[in-house]
Length: 77
Image 1 (spheres, rainbow, N blue to C red):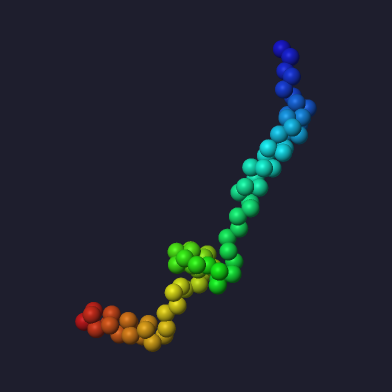
Image 2 (cartoon, rainbow, N blue to C red; image 1 turned 45 degrees about the vertical axis):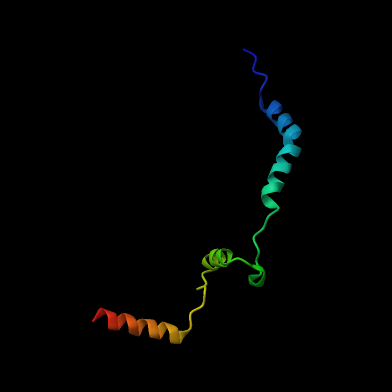
């Protein structure tokens, strides 16, 4: 049994198909998510990016947090 699809054949096919593979990989790599916070426009994008960075967004002031905790304590009674 003559097996012509050996390592040399696979390497030759890789060389032939390299340009096609590069085109496909460039399509996925051309889009990079926005890194500048000011350029993020949609709220959903900001929420997703904030979770990636570990930032609380939207930022809640300490006064509002204190008010909410007091309301929760009064509701629990």
